[in-house]
Length: 464
Image 1: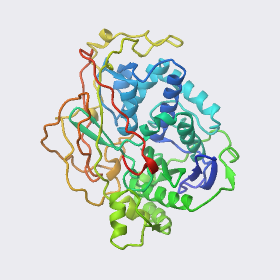
Image 2: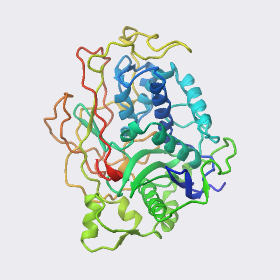
Image 3: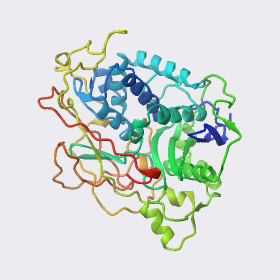
Image 4: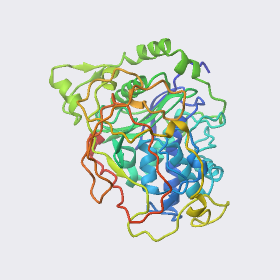
């Protein structure tokens, strides 16, 4: 397969019909879209009664050693499954992915086995999983077809958790973290899913949007930049919403077993200029009609000014509106008296394993990139159109080879600590960069903490 190929696919969630596809069965590195599989296995364990969303998970030394992006918690820290899933979907935290894996299955290896069993049961014949976070491993591969199957399964099997994929920002203590998904708040009807990036994979996204009662999922793999990824998804969504039916189904797409994936390193992280120009030339041939009111204020403002169409890149560069962040915290849920999920021997029940005291004097040092010099806030300011391709993913999503980010912005604030009500704070525009990851000492909760509230679903998915 040529290394310049960028697999893509549009699927109707209700029918499973493929509305359009290009190289959809080509083997590819998933990067952080892997975390959708991690969520699926975790929610399946909840449905089976093995644990609950309130079950506390204990951070292990192995989890603490993960490369960024990460929360940076020390070994022994406890975090509920619900808080962990929010951190996973918004921050794309690699240490939290390992914490979830060890809490659910006892070890990363056992969890990878569970991932492979789950994907096989879903018909994801081209996927092979060895870790829960998508950090580079040549053995871990998937395809656009398989990721579309996974995205559709998450919505159809676990509809009560749909809002987990549509959180615009989260707040931990004083730190606000925006979602890397450049479609949320920009494209009318966009309602979630997950991005991913490593140099070998390029910029990936599994994206969801709902309009006029139709729910579509788009997969884009191997885009050369974050802006290009978002623009390509915009073009595919517009094409999908203008297409009434497909020619085939996901299940009927010819899909051989897992194969070696191409390495996009030279094209994405070393020679991006030519790759981006070639990629965007094709994307820009799809004008986005403005139409009636969409519920996305900035999009509607352009239409109100008399502009009939926008290019996909215009949409991708729209400033993102401010989001009220969903608060997350460490520690146990209020009133919880059940077991703590932690690393343990294969086959052992949740509640067995290493106790907090065993980690109390652990000298495991988090990766240097995860150590903050000071606590920082994202400065609230008027959003401006994005000018840097990496603006929506300025913190490394998975790889230290991420193109350099712009300097961190700081601002003074009187942000309060976690309480039983969500603090109404605004998230930044995507032009701001995020701070380094937060570091926490081992924690044995002294007081019960409130549960984070997932945002309620809204019609058409265009607003938080």
